[in-house]
Length: 309
Length: 270
Image (cartoon, rainbow over all chains, first blue to last red; front, side, top):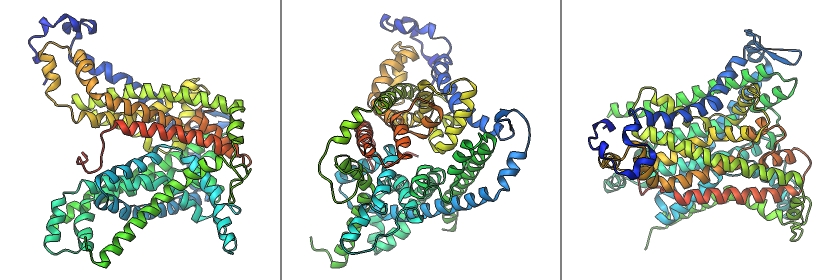
């Protein structure tokens, strides 16, 4: 359907005229161009170009603290073969992987309860409650955990009250996961809630009528139909945890450093922009790989299961 | 209703688990707000008595006041610009078919998925070459590049409910495509536009890494907090935090009020 097929344009009422007479609107391509070009330009200048420049910069050189155009592979070899980078890479993968597993494992039962056990009104409230932290005050909430878990913080004050020695809660893998779950859990639960609420209830009733117990319904009806959402929830959690800067900084004091910490440190120390960009580009490549694998798993599995039946 | 004991226990465990998870999510927010009214310098138990000392202290802190003003300016600019751009992107996705449409949509949709550390560094490196480093407008422009993704999503979802025949009807009655857009599509999208306005403001008000990278001497409120956090324990942080928390939670709640998204009443379209 195009505007060209409209025949009565010439007799347009006068009230539209301030927007240009219909004939003046020109070819059908004018409006999309007027709408689309600003978006395109904005995203190109402030999003795409910086990322392209990041890749370009990986081949540049720093001479006397000044960034100079060049084409050297030195930055890549120095970063990729450095023990610091490799340790940080393994550490970041391990941390983000742990967060992903924990987030999905905790989110699934919670989403199940919200989607199938709460009344529609309570479900809306739960969703509203979960949306708020996705968009607000992540850094503050990490700071709050820091003061709750610190040696003289609330948890240890409470434990001390019942005669338990202060626990070293802050500064290790435990507090790091607390921080990263603060970041990932709300969104992981939301993705699963929306998927589960969209399941056709008659499927579940049919399974129950055929004598399925609840555990079997979950394993054979609910889990397969939300498999793409489980993968989405997992990859989102991984993405957030992998790139996060705040939790490693405040929950472990950057020791051992994750890749994000390494980026900021590399920029700060001696303005090593090219090396920092190598780390950044390497992270983006790895994230793209993980997302690609996630995509492949969620589509491939369902296709194979479908074929097996 | 008489259910078997096992079922009741299982229900109890489910509700208990959900409650614990919600408590985990709510605790940090409550801690910030509650301890901003604590007279103690270091926030811990026992509670040191009610005090407005720290709230008063942030009012007297010129850096915090400036940062607040900066945040409001950046947030407002981001809200307006990303709602306009988000609407344009959503409408183009809704109405037109063209080659390279997928790259176009991805260009708008993807930015929030890129870790802010990497994006902030890339933006700083590139924009400082254009002489845009250290300006409030630059922080805003970068926030818009991220927030437009959410605006587009909210408005596109609303456009799903717009009948495909409504615009052609307006064209047949003599409206130009632009007139139909202004008099038919825009009014229909009003709730989504309002939601997008408040959500983009919230995204901007909460963002600190990019603002930290590209802002230079211009600190937004979250950047001020980040700098306070890297110093000593400062009881002002809880008070500023309460302000930020209240503002950003309010923005998100208003945005939610205007989106029609409800789990379960409509099947997610994906």
